[in-house]
Image 1 (tube, helix red, strand yellow):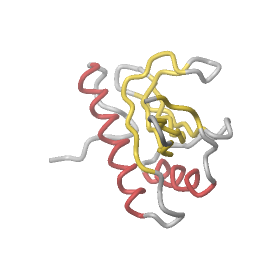
Image 2 (tube, helix red, strand yellow; image 1 turned 135 degrees about the vertical axis):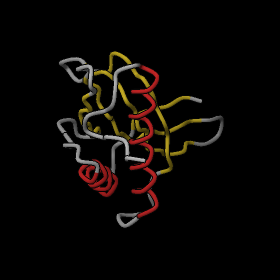
Image 3 (tube, helix red, strand yellow; image 1 turned 90 degrees about the vertical axis):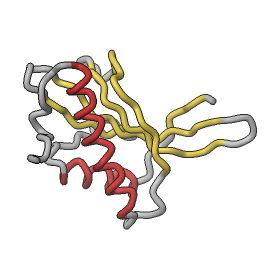
Length: 131
């Protein structure tokens, strides 16, 4: 299966920005079809959440998806290290609450998983809920 970047529909971009804002992250859309937000960890590591649309190609069909990644970016906004990547189905429309909740949960879980596996300490922007 191969992937290729797709143009991000406006409603998907708005949902992604809304989700990042709800998490307390500052979304950046410097690039037209990619939305990013910075994550800072206790040890000073800075990673980025990247949201973009992809087309997954199999033998006879192409399926649009939303890819969510946590990666280290260089100065030119290129991913130098990809820590985690998940794909999700494209939302049905601008009011797809289920997509918004799933994206929120995915970003939190991915940020915490990277923190736990990488030994970077807690994510400063997304603290774990107290137990």
